[in-house]
Image (tube, rainbow, N blue to C red):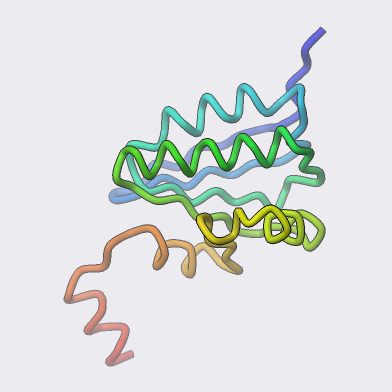
Length: 126
């Protein structure tokens, strides 16, 4: 019996989508997560994986496939809250060259959402 072990919350923003994941990204859960993330790739995605306690190769592949779908759609993907072991695996596999590993949602948004001139001016003045 195939039991998904990841919970997913999708927060639809004005110019982006934030996805909160918790559980284990493994062979059982990854296909469902991959399909849902790829369906959301029409807009910039920030995926918060701070609640993901385990990534296996299928979990890494699901994130990589989502990043490729984002690229095809002309959007972007960034990860937030990647635990140290998973971050090391993303780096070993070279996935961090295509998928930003960010410390905060704000940092991730700077990676995936094109900023307006007014936002950049406010940040510089801030």
